[in-house]
Length: 356
Image 1 (cartoon, rainbow, N blue to C red):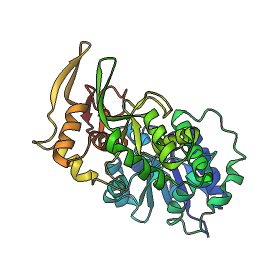
Image 2 (image 1 turned 135 degrees about the vertical axis):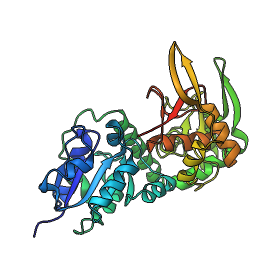
Image 3 (image 1 turned 90 degrees about the vertical axis):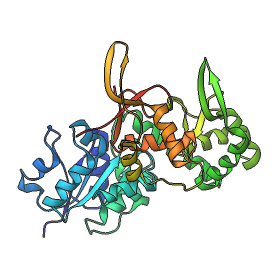
């Protein structure tokens, strides 16, 4: 009897190789779907080799690159192959939030998966692989031994997004060896927010509700007894796993005069993304206007600050949390920077809703 295969359409060859090796290690056949501009529905319907497939893993950026929304593709595939396990993936994120996962399931995916690291296979790939295995029905995924297979891969230059995931898991490993898990560190740093958050300026630019990284290092050193070097690793782990973010998303956490914000105002605090996205686009949502920058016209867009202010006023969240919500909507392909040059930030950057 032919074993059900896993179909892959991932953004990079690095990810394809990691997933193929992990699946092969568990005796699961896999096939890479061609990325030739056709929709997944067209590809799946054009070749009988894909008929025995049990699961499909597809990167959200791979869908956006060919002009397809994740939710539309999910609906089409569900109509054509209702028994196929369907998994979306955010390759550049070490963690996906419960709100993002709920959005994916609302739109027909079995799960939304984070990115993975070949260097930290057991920690990063174990849970995503176990989720996909539920649609394939072989033996359970053996996360603890994945490194045996993935360690044989010779993949160079995986890219900046993968390097960020590597650093997040390396920092996580360092702090866990010291006996301090991520939730404990997150709670400790959030106690710092009571006196650490303030409006600040740098070179004439204002940054609302942020804290100084070096002051957070001092707090973690004093309150958690980490020592400054381990406190930096703790901050990098919290950044990598979406607890804090740099105000312009350009710098890695360090013991320096760098400004950061919290992704949420309280531990475990989540916002349902589907109603937020719908409300943002409604007639009384964020205002849309035609704008001009450096002589170029950008129709029906809004600034990051306008969206942040709308989210703060409508949801009662802080600036950092509002920024994180905007970024999560970007990750899912619901909105974009007009020149695809920036992530979501509080400021005069122009953003627009995607239309498919």
